[in-house]
Structures are given as structure tokens and as C-alpha cells.
Length: 430
Image 1 (cartoon, rainbow, N blue to C red):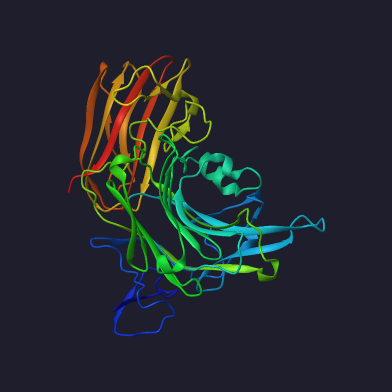
Image 2 (cartoon, rainbow, N blue to C red):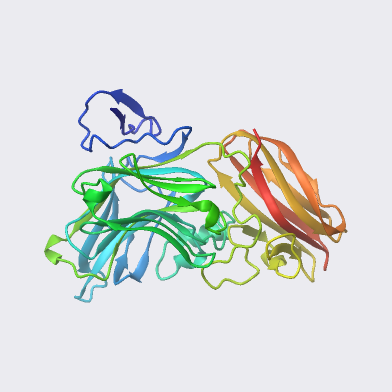
């Protein structure tokens, strides 16, 4: 039996493998080993006494789902993260409300294997703990939400809207119900879900620690409990538009009544780990076709998953001229402008990559560039050709050594000069 021990504070990404029996307080069947071929790319072992807000947002909503989701319900004890379910006077008006808490990553993660180790609260009905991924959008800062979301959007670190679909590694409705799957919000409201199961069917003892993971690839998503495959989704038939995801851990109220005598209750999380591997030939850019439709009413000018910077209104989407799909990106204004449309990729495997796009251009700009930067080498660019026909442009042999890259389209031009972009692909070639 292979066991993975939690890393120490002094070496947060280290993992130690041991053979033979070793009592670490979780089931013998549990395993932290990822599927074959993966390497650890990011981890938070929660070995602290306060949340690392450089890497996490608080999930805050006041009110939400019949209660409040508050930063006060998130704590760390030096070895694990704790989300508290409570029933308390939030507003000082003598009336008690249900409370919960949650966190969302400030980093976005793409294809790979996501894993946590958790001990979930099961003391009463009416409470919901979840391990899932979905992008963020600006209005999550509303209703008392974490102001860092707006700050990151304004600083061109996050897109205005990256909320297109979700992947639910589990949704646990206390005391003994769990389901998993994803809900494709951007492409026909299609649901792919394993229906609710009790702990025995899922291989879970809720009073103990269990390991939960999901493997997200271009062709499938697989869901695991204690190293055992429970459910698979065929991603080739989903019709969704890929984009890197924000990771969420949440504990909230549901509609069912609760036994107040069982509160407060706690769901505890030992770590979050993300593993990656090369997906040669797969496009790692989110919404590279610009066809994604957000799940809320954002204006057409805002391309989901992409970040707009500088003269933001000069970059928008059109539906009357595109290379494929049903939309393309345009940069143009009736006054002189400078604008960048970009996407930041993190925790990607080092290796050799290729960047391509289909483009048009009126010509005459001071600059009209496709760019790749922050990949560990000197920025590389290619200038748009002057053409009214969709033309392929390429930056090849990009040697990524920083496990990251920024893909950008920048134009600086006078009034009514324009570029158009579609079918952008950033793929690993070796």
C-alpha cells in the first residue's frame, strides 16, 4: 500500500512515499497518487494559521442560498483549512441566520488532475459542501463579495467574465448524499451528472478523511474517491468551450431544515493539489474561437476568458465576419486607440509550443501584433499582414521554461483602422 504524507511547512510541495502500514487517520484505500504521467504543478498544503490571500479569494455572499457566506467562517489551524457551518446573529438585530464560508483560487488552472483530502461535515441536513471549479466574473465582488476580484480585473490580471461552465468533483449534501459531474452552462444547458449516492456507494466514511480528485482532459473528465474511479464524462460530445478554471471550496446552506443542536459544524481540508502533464496538440487557450456565450448577460464586446487592457472599448466581438464558429474579435475605434486582448496561462508544462491565429487587417497601424511573452524567454511577435482575407499567422518553436505564457493581441492605431482575429491556438508540439 502506497501512502503520501502531508508536506511540512518548510517544504510545502514535498511529498513522501512510504511502503507498509502507517496510521495517518484516513482509509487504507485512500491514495494521493495521481493518474500516470502527471507531475505536481501547484499545491497549497494549508500549513498556516491564515489564508494565503495572494493565492485565494474569499467567497463572500450576503445573503446567499438562505444564509450568509462569510470570510469569518474560513480558518486555518496550522495543518488544515476549516469551513464552518453556523447559525448566528450576523447583523446584530437579534435574529440568527445560517452561515457558511468558502474560498476561490486567484490562479486559473487548465487541463490536469485536481485533488483534495477532506473530512466533510455530516451532522444534519440542510448543509452543502462542494469541491469544484468554475471561472469568476466581476459581479462576484457585489453584495459584499471579496473586493480583490474587482481589483484583479481592473489590474488586467483576470477577465471580466470567465464563468462558462463548472466541474463538480463532489457536491455533498449533509448528512449522507454525494454527486459529481459538470453542468455545461455555455452550450445548451447540458448536464452530465452522476446522481446522488450515499457514502457506502461512494466509498466514503464521512467521519474520516477521504481523498477526492478529478482528471480533466480534452477528451474526458474522470472523478475519483480514494483512488477509485467513480464516474466518467465524454468531453468530445459536450459542445462546451474550454477555458482555464478557478478552483472553489465552499460550504453553504441548502433549503432543507437543519438540527440547530448539531451546529456549529465543520468541513476540513488537508490540502489542494494540481498536477499537469503535456497534452500535445490540445489548445490550452480558453475560448480561442471567441464563440463562448457567458451564462449571464454581459455585453457582446466582452470576450469570455480574455482580458482587455487599456482602451477596452476598442476591442469587441462581431457576428458578421468570422473564420469559423459564429464570432470573431475586432480591435477598432472611431478615435486613435491602443488596446491589448490577452490571456495568461499558468502551471502549463515546460516544452516547445506553437501559437497560430487567423487574422485580417486594414493596415496602417503603428503596431498590430500577435505576441507571446512571460514564457521564460524574450517576447516574440509577428506583425499582422494587410489583408481582407482570413490569413494564418504563426509563432513557432516557443520554448516555455517558466511553466507559464501570456498570449496577446495588441494594436495601436488611428481612427477606423482595424484588425480581426479568430481561431487562436496555443499548442504544445514537443
